[in-house]
Structure formats: structure tokens, C-alpha cells
Length: 281
Image (cartoon, rainbow, N blue to C red):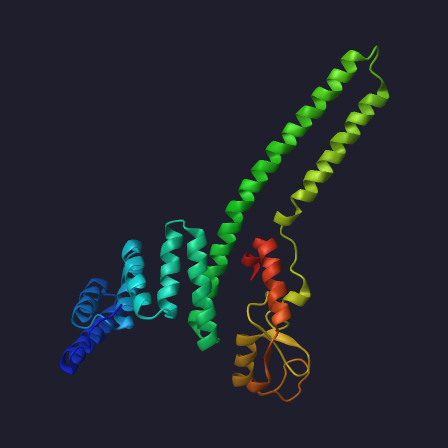
């Protein structure tokens, strides 16, 4: 979006309108906040925060179409706006556009943890992303379960017809034929049970979980001691508790942390195959 620079006096007026909007928002006067941010946008439409602030107001009112419009405007100005990607993702999810919504939330999460990995907004984004991914899995899982059940019933019917035809052609139906039919049904049951295992929640492997939170990793880092932790949790430990490894007690500085890309990739593969695990994180 190419916009002409505005005079300093106009920019100052726009900033005052933004401050008025902020004050109104804090008092939950959402309509007044929207009016103030709209005035700021009219005066100075090239400031990203004016658009995202108004989008947040619309989000409070659940006016998702307007949230989407304002976020898209904001992203034209700054393609790396964490708030714009986040709220756009929420708006798309409300329209049940799961793929697009998840994509925007993932972008917001990656940008957010790169700038402020311990920020509360990163946690909020992750919770929304995990919920969306779980809903996406739940929807797909239900469809798979229905298809498997239909296929199982079709196979059972075909087996029954096959054995009925065999028995009608035989001079006398043997006990062996009945046993064979039962064995085939058991085998069929076993096959479909195994097919359903991927959609059956179990316990996430320990090596994919942080030793402090016991939750599945999101942004794993490894210390010189060889222990892997969740980045945000470890940074909080270094800040609040002390500069040492929580398990080994060895001295530890933030600059010594290295992303554990192998574990990060393993977690992503696991989550792709076991979408139910998003609910457990």
C-alpha cells in the first residue's frame, strides 16, 4: 500500500485520537474506541496499529468480517504484524476456513516467539492455534471414523454373502466353514482396529515433552548439559530463579541456548500424525 506522508500536525492529531481510543477501550466503551480509531485511520491511514486496534474492537464485538478487513489492511502495511496475522486467523476460523485460519495463526506464532518468546501474547496465540489444530483433527477424525465403519460393514456383508453362497453350493455346510467365517471376521476386526489407532489418544512420548512443564514441546532449546527444555519456560527460569540449568544445576546463560531442531521436527511429525495431542499441550 503506497500512501503519501501526512503533515506532522495531522499525524499528531491521529496519535491523539489513538490515545483516546485506547482510553475508551480500557473502560470497555468499544463503540467510542472504534470511532476514535476510525478518526485516526482517516487522518493517517499508514499506521498499522490504528488498524489492528480497531480490529481488536471488532473482535470484541464478534464482527469478524470487519476484523478480517482491518487485518488485511494492516498486513498490506506490515506483512510481519503479529497481531494482524493472529486476529485474521481467528476471523477465518470463525468462517470455518480451518486451513487458512491455521496458516495465519502459525505465522503469528512464529513471528511472536521470534520477537518475544516469553510474552503473554505468544501463549495466547499458541492456545488458539492448538485449539484450531485439534478442531481440524477432530473434524477429519470423525470423517475417517465414519468411512472406516462403513467399509467395515461392507466387508462384513461381503464375507457373509460369500460364505452363504459357498454353503448353498455345498452338499452340507461343514463346521470348518463356520469356523473359517468366524476367523475371517476376527481378522477383519483386527485390521480395522489397527487402522483406528492413529486417531486414538494415548500418552505423548516423554522425549517430546519439556522436563519442567511436561507438555509437548513448542520451541525446544538444548543446554550445554544436553538437556532440552521449552524456550519460554527456561528463559523465565533464568530470569526469575537463577542462571543455572534446572536439572543439572550447571551455570547457564541465555546465549548458550541452542534450538533443538531435531526434536522440533519430531514434534511436528508427531502432531501431524496425532492431532489429538494438541489438546494435551
